[in-house]
Amino acid sequence: MVTYNISLDDKVVLVTGVAGFIGANLAKRLLTEFGHATVIGIDCITDYYDVSLKHDRLKELAAFGNRFIFIKESIADKQAIEQIFNDYHPQVVVNLAAQAGVRYSITNPDSYIESNLIGFYNILEACRHHEVEHLVYASSSSVYGSNSKVPYSIEDKVDNPVSLYAATKKSNELMAHAYSKLYNIPSTGLRFFTVYGPCGRPDMAYFGFTDKLLKGEKIQIFNYGNCKRDFTYIDDIVEGIVRIMRHAPERKTGEDGLPVPPYKLYNIGNNSPENLLDFVQILQDELMEAGVLPHDYDFNSHKELVPMQPGDVPVTYADTSALEKDFGFRPQTSLREGLRKFAEWYKKYCR
Image (cartoon, rainbow, N blue to C red; front, side, top):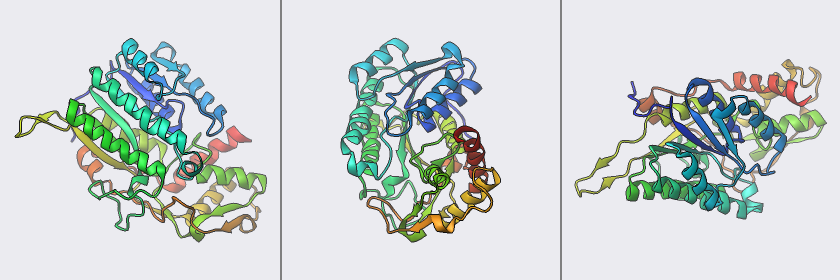
């Protein structure tokens, strides 16, 4: 059983990317479960996808009154970050702000450098100059590239990214390690595996497929359906983050008298990759069951098998043994259960 060394009950927690899918769900969980915690949320509300989803998430968080403080700024604005740390003195920082998406990084590389590298550097610098008890930050399963060994382990060598997005996330891990070593900042990186669920990102396959099917458009299934993804339900991701937030890596001194970096990495995935064709079948079953699409919908005429896209990988598969060993937790939500909850939400929200 893990022994937690951080109590969140009376903490000020900074959540970057708070209007995003994971950020909003995490903030809601913190505000609901830890009654004396204050969440400072920062987000610049980019138009990478429909901003109405982001505003709806923020509206839900605003119901918590003065325990939730929202600041519309970019983490790439160094002065804004310094001001937040000076004004609110967060003790725990969860950096989820990032430009996401593998394919988008091919056409819009500037936004990845600005948010994922410059923005993360600003967070690290602020943590360096303030008494931060734990920095938790989002990495990605994309760092594994086209790793042929499965499942992917945090011990694997990940020096061959196949997209700029993956390269920025690996850079985050290296930057955090350097700051942990130099300044004794406890930091934990989380490699997320294909996160999905209600009110998620419209650029993700399950959401995009649903939108297109509803409009009568064709959906493209990459690598002719011969891809596997370790789909991880949002509640499982948030559960993992909350557990990890409460246990900062221990500060220790090495034999050389210098700090041993208080630094950890974890995979958070379902440890159960699903073939894309099976995923599409489950999605269409649940969309019909929820009444999003009629039971006589002709799915076959709306499916197109296409080659692999640049930057994509054939499989993602999380080895979660470190997470289980240290925190007694592994994601449990089945893909069918998760897609059912998404379909039910979509029926209410998008029709």
